[in-house]
Image (cartoon, rainbow, N blue to C red; front, side, top):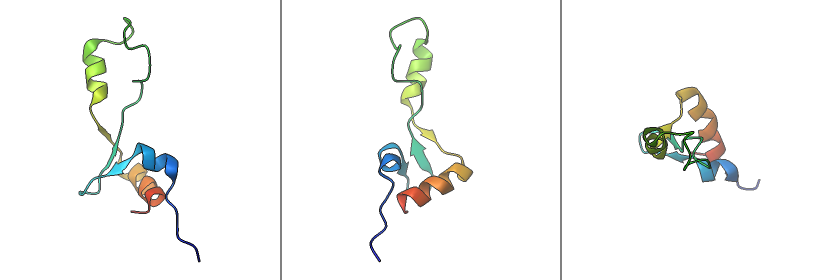
Length: 66
């Protein structure tokens, strides 16, 4: 039987920390960053990492084979 492959799309988007928590990037940071639509505070908070809920993390870990 061949080796299992990790889901490449998930591998590019998520990382699993040593504690088992799945780290992700926040959404809505791709465009419209120099207009009045997003405040400076909101853009600054979008830089910080987000973490998945336990129920979602279970699915992602299966995709990453960890």
